[in-house]
Length: 303
Length: 281
Image 1 (tube, chains in turn cyan, brown):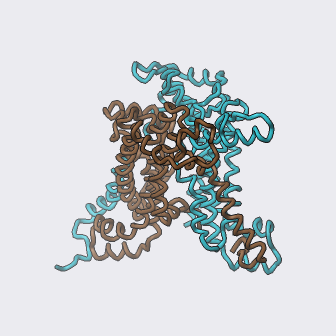
Image 2: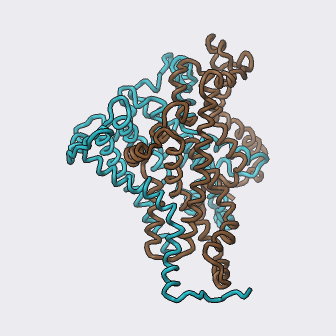
Image 3: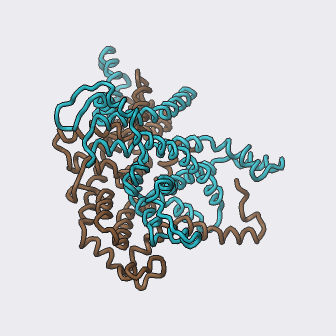
């Protein structure tokens, strides 16, 4: 057989085929993504302007769901908790860096240590939630017993309105720190050794070295760690649902959980109101997502 | 290397590091070790208040009891039935989309790419009502198929980002050379690119396995009951039923955590390569 170096089709057909080819490759994946992800976002916004129990007729009520949110104390509790999550979750970034620095050695068995430290991230949040509930359990939980031994009075973290959110966040930090750690361990692998040596010759060490020489080179890792931590904090749902179901008295609710509660629980099937909460959460997250996309866009153009 | 290698420090510092490693690890995994110990504690120990001491004997029958007294077997099976098809589906779709976005220059390619990336980060709650509604109207509510279809679609976002970046890093000359030879685009995809992206396929498969196995939210929204619920949702309902049976809840937790942990240890290199994509420039 003789290989044809040129396409025998007429130029016009060839051009059409060329523009069509990428779309053919994209079609199945894009169709799925449109149906299950992109269109539902628009639909949710639409639903948020309605009064709907999920079964019967949807009734247009304009902005009524949003104005109800404006006066809803539970909404502000959830929002406040989301802010607490966001701020405290950020601790995962420096904590992950610390553990990564601690483990960034070449001694015997260090690879196994690294994987074991990473363990909490691989486990389901449901399991993490159960583990920590047991850790906090009044009467016999290890933490409860320790506090009782120290102060003479045990504290049931998950039953106290003032502590409950912090207790859940601590559980969430556990896997999140492990994740940041693995990002930094990979980043540290790529730090240029000659720069470190040069800085050492100039007398830099410890904190100064970390701050001026190492951290600037870890910027890609830090960026991803911060983005994923923000998104993780705002998405937090599993732990709240497993550990407290939003209680006691709704004091540990976050927006994602409050939405679920309004739309799909024994409290009623208020799809429209739930959708309005989801739209607010989505709006908050879009600030961060757009920032991320904007940076990616700049990086792509730089290529 | 930073920090300074311990080998270059004083012997005392070196010994201290060797001691600190296991101590830190035990502290770090303390909650998990507690659960592992409880999972083999006989219930009589719990009744006598022996929660933290040595178990009076190793009660492996707790693991059997979990299967005997609860639909744990069915929950685990449901998780597997959901996870494997999603793994295959999402990776297959994203090989195609990743190839299209990495190899061709066409109008709106950036827009499509960023659509996948952004969609991957949205909060699940904004999708919940419509996706549940769609699943109900397709007659797929409370079926494995309904749950798997959503997961395939959603995971395609992350997988496309990953595949596209991986394929983009391949040498372009390979593809150009094949085109000059007159090889069709599909053959380029199938015979040239796919064999080269095998490491990426491995990395994505482990990651998707872990993500889907550990999913809880969609399991709660799209399924109910032991016939279809995966192990995460099942564990939650068991926790409600076995209020004081911590030895059983612990055994169930360990069982639920095992498959992704095994997956991670078997495919560690791929797993970490997948997660840290982009963390090194």
